[in-house]
Image (tube, rainbow, N blue to C red; front, side, top):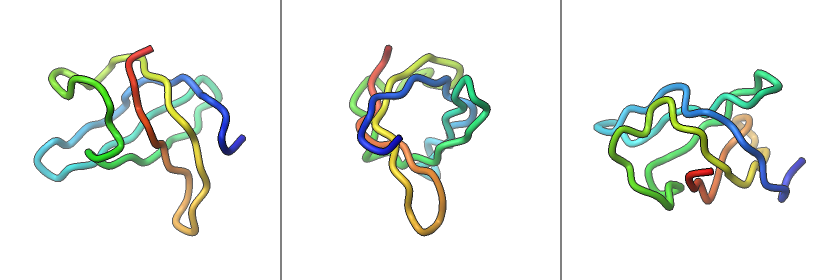
Length: 68
């Protein structure tokens, strides 16, 4: 699954802490940081986005997040 484009919905976003989570249709949660977002950060929660998934030693992570 790493390297392919996935689609999901922003589940949680904490702009002051600089991170959030994306939930995919498969019910997987992907962690992301502010620096991974490549679209407008205003009212991001609940939006459908596409991203590049990757696995890290801490779990699943989303990179290069854009609006779908």
